[in-house]
Image 1: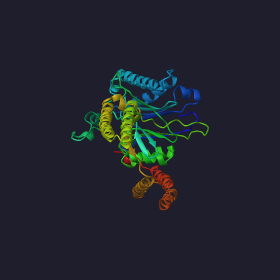
Image 2: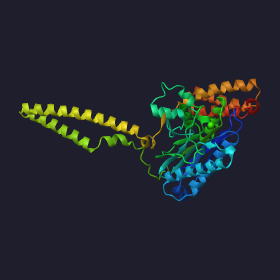
Image 3: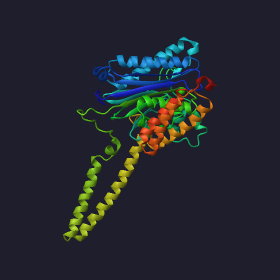
Image 4: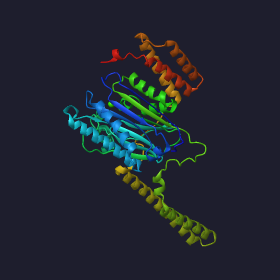
Length: 423
Ligand code: CA
C-alpha cells in the first residue's frame, strides 16, 4: 500500500449481556507522518483477556499497552520481526506480572495485531481472536484459531468422528501470559488492495456472527456503522461474551500512483516450469514433423513418429499430474506453507439483498421486545429509518436499504436495558 492511501478506522467494544467485566482491550495507532509509517506502519490490535475477576482485564490491557509501545519505538527494518518481538515483549510483561501475585498466576490474553506497512498487511497472532479481510464479495480469515477444535481439525484433517469436537471451540491452546515462552504466528505480508477492509475481533463477535454475515456488514457499512452493527448483533443474539471489533478500510490509490500487482499465486507457475514446457514443445515438434512426413510420401515413418509423439504426450501429461499432486501434498505437510500469506478459511459474503432481508427481520423482532417491555426508544426517528429501508427494498436499492436498516436497529439498541438483562 501507499502512504497517500487514506485509512478509515473505527472500534467498538461492549461488555455484553452476561458478563460482569469487559476483559477485552483494543488499540489503534495511525502513523502521524510518512517517516513513522515507513519505519513500522499503522497498527491495530485486539486482546481478549482471561483468568477471572479483574485479572483478564489486566492481562489484555498490558498487551495493548506493551505491543504498540515496543513496535513503535523499535528500529528494526523488518516489520515482521518487529511485530513478533513486540508480542513476545507483551508475553514477558504479562508473565512477569503473573508471577508477582498469586491471584494473577493464570492470567492470560489472546492477541491479534495487524500492521499496515509499505510491504503489505502483516499479522501477529496468538489465541482465538480473529483477523478477517473483506475484498469485494469474499471474506477471508487470515488467522489460525489456536483452539482445540482447530488444532484437532489440523491434526486429523477433519472433525468427523471426533467426540464432542465442537465443544472444544472455546478451549484455547495458546495465549500470552501463562508460559514464559510462546510461539507467535507471524503471517504476511499480504498485498493490500484499495477498498480492502479488515476486521479484528474477539470471539464474542465471531461466535455470534457468521463469516458471510461479517463479510456483507463490512462491505455495505462504513467502519463506524459496521463496528456498531457487529456489537449490536452479538448482543441481539444473546451477548454471552464481551465483544470487540476494530474495522479498518484502506482508501483508493491517488491518481498519480501506479497500482501494485495483484496477489501472486506461485504454485501454478512454479509447477509448470521450463523443463515441462520444453518437453511438451519437443513432443509437439515430433508430431508436426510426423504429419509433414506423411504428407510428403513417407507414410510409414510419419505414422510411427505421430504415434510415438502421441504416446509421449500421454505419458508426460500423467507425469505432470502426479508431479502436481506431490507438490500439493508436500505443501499441505509443510506448516510454514499454511502459515504464510494464505487465508485459513474463506467464505462468500451474503448479497446486499440477503443482508437487508436479515436486518429487516431482526428489526421486526427487536421492535416487538422493545414495545412489549417499554424501552424508551425514539420511535419517530426509528420509523423514518425503517420506512426508508423498506422503500429501498421495494426499489431494489439494497446497499442504501442496509444502511437505513442498520440505523433503525441502532436506534432501538441504544435503549437496550442493561441491568434487567443481566443474569
Ligand atoms: Ca471472549
